[in-house]
Image 1 (cartoon, rainbow, N blue to C red):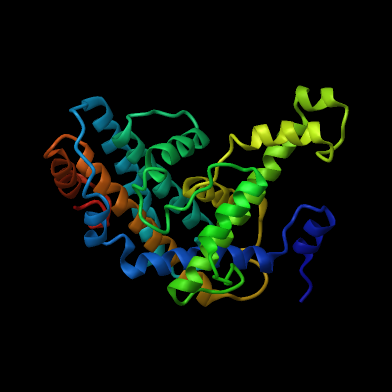
Image 2 (image 1 turned 90 degrees about the horizontal axis):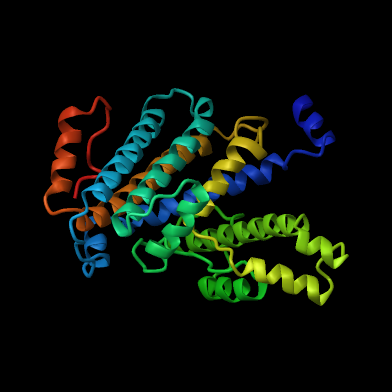
Length: 321
């Protein structure tokens, strides 16, 4: 059957190929869920990961920020869980599910930052930068959320990606059904996010006064490359940045790929379930870390309060320690 809307979007030059956009979207989440389902965010693993984390001096203001952000993560998880459990047709809610998934991740990460340094950021990008410094680089988040790149300079990134990948040949074209396949897809998405962030940074550099002063049109000349690489060295990629890009692709750029054209009903059902699995795993890890950092006894009070007073329909398993 002819696809009128898709053809119109292609004619406008503003649409990704739906098959590839769909494949990358569902296969990354499938890979993350495969790892989480293997126990990396289970209590035993988290207990070992955070065994050396110490409680900080009492800071009521920062602790309150932890609880506020974690409640927001919990609320978005409730939305995602309701969509996963109650929607009769997952096509109807798959795009909204991605948004709830992202905010589950974002607010849980914000809680971790508040628990670590008490830092308050005004933007999502700012939060991602502090989260990398406070959490990812200090190895305070379990795999698969712990991979990061501390530069956008290509030759440095290629070395880091090669180290992460090893001899694993799987990528986002492969739908993961084991840990090795999952790892290949996860590294592949990290590499793809780097490519996007590098392009984004280069476009920003091209519009700068310093670049225009060079009188060049691209980065072929040494002076242009030096200007570019100085800026790229300040860039980074981590799980929170990947999640932000993921939400953007689903909500803005790839406008129709999730619910248009080919019938992928079973994959969409699995996709929404995977979103929920990954959000629960991330929130549980963030809760475990935060519970160690806040004033002794207050995490239990927080969880008990949610249990007794929330009007949300989900249980407290994700935040209970």
